[in-house]
Length: 124
Image 1 (spheres, one colour):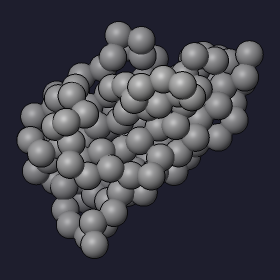
Image 2 (image 1 turned 90 degrees about the vertical axis):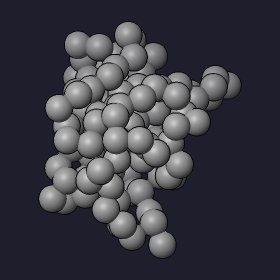
Image 3 (image 1 turned 120 degrees about the vertical axis):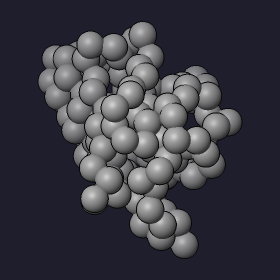
Image 4 (image 1 turned 120 degrees about the horizontal axis):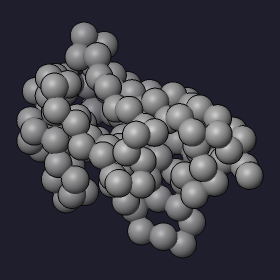
């Protein structure tokens, strides 16, 4: 059974940092791009960041560019999202997802495996 399990969420003050992890099991995703999405209450799920299979290419939403960094460790079948300078508007449920493709994409329809999410709450 394929599983993506996110961890590292929590409550942090504005300006703080968190590091999210997403551990995959059941199969290797070393040839797949991986991504992070988020969904705030009352809003649609939105793209945050993605990384290609090798880690050599990344994409970011404009709202997080310069503050968030996505990375991966294929030996550990794990992808990370380092979030710095957090803002209250970053508050959301953060999801990890595995792409159908090896190159990084932004569209949620390109992703066919999803985790259950980890909550990030940023207080002002």
